[in-house]
Image: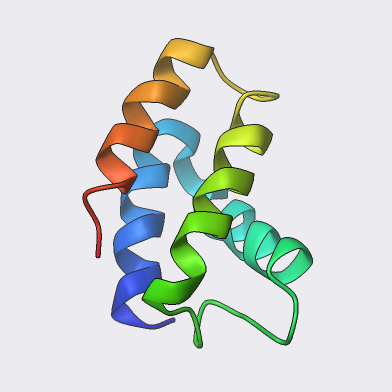
Length: 77
């Protein structure tokens, strides 16, 4: 996992706990396509990744918590 992905997983883990890494990896793998993984994640992938993290997280946790998480994620570059 590269440092960008680690920063994202760290934020998401505050909301999803130990499932965060698998959750972020799933969003990257299934929605970004073209072999993007946590090892190859780059800044150009962030807008699409964040879109899918937000959509999927709303199915799991309170929308207010999702909004807080997204605010934190959008500071990562």
